[in-house]
Image (cartoon, rainbow over all chains, first blue to last red; front, side):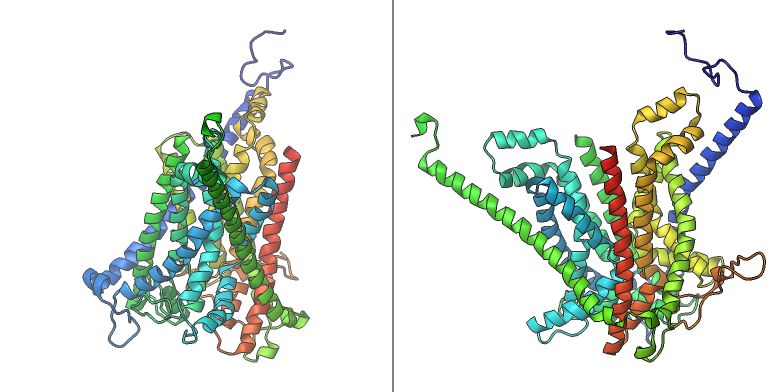
Length: 315
Length: 308
């Protein structure tokens, strides 16, 4: 029967038609599964809503006691003192300083490594390096914290004898190594997405590999590379354990990396480790701090998302 | 000599300089690679040299103690194992289901867009925020307390995006012909998915699950915020009992500690003896996470070779 029409719904090649009950049962099962899968996918939206709800409602309670202006301009953060101050600036200063150190390590090193892997390295080296980077990314953050406090800080103390045991430099540097794999892998993906025709054109004009990498590949991959930086930033400001272990827990309004300081995340850890009762201002203050953090990372993530979407559309 | 088409002396100098810079950059690239590897090596060596001498049977079977020489990680690794059980039981089915829906079922519309952007975003939310979600909703909202169940739930939410993304990528790499062939044989959507696509996507999904669990087992911050006790001198009730029905879920409601929390606790003490114990716990943790990640890389490598 070559050339005949395909069989109608449910008719087997033998010409035997499955019973209507079978088909109805099958259709029902298909619908139920589709519904269940949709429910699972929607769970993620529920999680986001729950996060926003929890942060917003507790922060709202917090801001009923503390003015928004005081929160944003007071230079002291002492919620557990007898005379409490609730200025987020010291925590932000710590967060920004440590993140800046981390990024000043991870962004140059990550960009160079990504360019090297995508434009210079042969596939055999890449096959070795990529798993190595994944291993690095898989190391638990608490282990990095141990490394910062008990290996890097003593090492740095030989350079700076006055360096306190808790300082921002050491966790900053270690965090830089920690986020390096993310920046390398995302930037390299963006660079490899650049069409080979562009490279071949550059080589035909007599460009060296370096000139091709810097003048052709990097600009073409720029939005993807920038997205990688933004995700790195989001990771740096949200990182908790390395900072909580190695930077100390004293809110300190300073940008000096040789001093110790608390960050937004360490404050949350510090309060969680103590006995803070549900419903007190101290309890609510960790949600206000977390809301600040959430908005920061959200801004980085959303910007990164749109940049990545753009670089996908170009080719 | 330029009329012959060959470079002039000036041109030669420029080319030579460009070549030197090219080689210089190759050198810098290798140097960065070398430094990154050296840091990873230093981290592992420092941890192993300090910690490994403390790891023996006593260390694995003892409770934490105020005396460093008698302290062990029994409740920590039992806690980690039980928490992982809850995390796996929740994250695996939900993650695969969400990935399946988005890749195979989802119509191209606004709802799908929202879900997709949302999952990308969730992957970027700092882990400690998940901890506060758990504190506000699970611990105080649902009154579940600071238990193994809550810890497993929060870690499941945290690693869910990893499994979703891995599932989607694995499904995307299956040629469209497989789906068309299944439909041509009269299979409906669910039959196609369950009989052909899921088996074909298994290596990719498995890789995602292992990476996700490796991340969950090393995660500390969200468990600190739900108040995971750091001094636990007892074990949760066993999941298997002598009396019928032989399984008990009492352990879900038990307080707990996990390996990374125990390690954090020991690092936070001033005495060097506890730091050495922290290193020992770190070695155990590192071996587990690196082994899991290595396994995931191996599975992916083998699957890629099989596909040619």
